[in-house]
Length: 395
Image 1 (tube, rainbow, N blue to C red):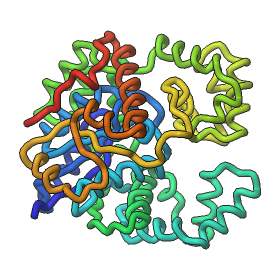
Image 2: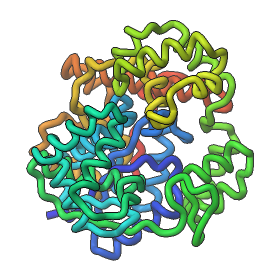
Image 3: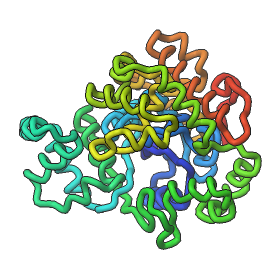
């Protein structure tokens, strides 16, 4: 039986830290690696730097066996929703283990926290704190710290937050894969400077935005540097600029509080806050200044704005309705062949998947729009319809 490990990733972009994880898994005996990859949108509420097709290709070149996409309605959710989509894909692919990064490096603690978040005790405690009219994230943190005498950095570190949600989702699904924790080395998420020879994806994107291509390339694995550099030199990448921000703002100007209320992650308070902030602003920068950023994270606000642009509302299926393959090698083909027990349809073709159900069709339409939006707002606009014209990459 094929020994396969699964990873949920964004690879925005793929860098030496990601290669470190793949090398670590290879040393552990996992030669077959399946990745559930964010599609054209990423969790911070933005379009990806490089297209999903290019990121899948780079991942395969660096040692991944199979890459499947997490479509836009799910890749843009908070940690809980993002983890739910990723684990659903990996479970249906039949992986025997799941690997993720962690700042604390304590699997036992992360598992305890995940179990607590599924308990009635937590639900009751959270409810009490929410009655104090504080933001959900703060109430969640207070409920956990009331139960565990731990450093609150575990609840703020990006990898640890996701790790807890990955474990929690596996428990919820009554699925027990092995967990392979990889302690994060060097720069942390969005660290402003490189550390120990590693840079955060946010730092690399900043280098690209500032046209420091040589520096950005220095944190990418050696074997994919030519491909990565080609994408930059041909301006086949996305960085949010004034033209994109104007389009984003124009879309928001057409919305009322009722419209905002239909968007995922947007509660009643935020709906009215958006309506009021739009009327008081003339740019995205001013809008962000007029929104309640002390109560809500910037990522959440950005997600809501991108949800609005792409027309993503509450009525999408709560779970990913299909598995779409972006790239695979011979080991990846074997993973797919062995996934006979999958409850989700698996295919590389959107045409095939769209014909299966109205749910598949709705999600595909949105992800395809996100892909086209990425093409339009790349530094140099490129052809539309790539979800239907790009062939599966095989290595």
